[in-house]
Length: 366
Image 1 (cartoon, rainbow, N blue to C red):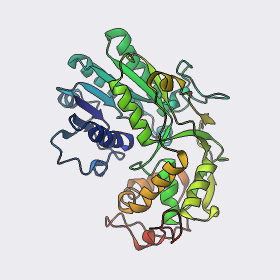
Image 2: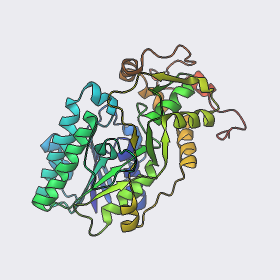
Image 3: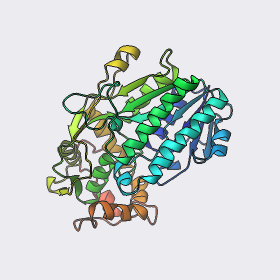
């Protein structure tokens, strides 16, 4: 089988590519990625020498690039999107362009190429605030940010291609992912890396907004199942781990793991349109596919924090240049308590970052 993975140099996409080639070594994998600020070829390091892997730089909004990448493919797993809620609030146009129009280009190419399975990665953000119970697949879509609205548009566009053209589409709506290679604009890597740098952890508003959290490898296992499952065309599947935690709980856990002081927490003005609670009902995928998460939340979070502790060169390069400007725009000037200097300009971790690693006897020592 040849699988086209769009956005495969991003966080979830790159983890899925590693999973796919590890679990199905006879498959061919083509990655199409524009390499925006969130795409990083380092996420795919080690795959270049494989004869069944190919990377193509291209934009999903460009029909020519899509046609070339999709040639000979049997299946498409579509991750490529602008994904960060905060950025969509500042500049919504690129989200509509990439997430909606880009998806339409892919769907047209998939129809022309006779693709046998099109896995569309949506998000639980499309439901808006779930209220008193987790969202079900048949709940109305009430997106509350430009990002969520663009994903809702792409979600329904994909479904329309199943209804109109019988394109074998399956749609997933997953909760918040965490794990290795996640861009440090997102909550978990931002809090971990800020703590390692001795900087404040910016908490929107009161910090009690809750999300269901799933480790990225569990998400990849679901996508693998849906890539191969029979009788799922035209259906939506919620994906989550039933691990709801608010921002203060996540921050407290990260600071505890790293043995950092709790006064690093800093409350900042709340995000516009901030959703109080995201959670999804996962009975459908459990009953239909027999899936359940393998990773416990606590062990997965410890493993994730360890990855950022052990890979400062990866994230320190990202947290420079454009990211510094973005950070100041969102949260204000970097905290005066910052104990290190960025080493991204040289491509090497600073001595200060190394000095913040957990001491002997901590959960990550040795």
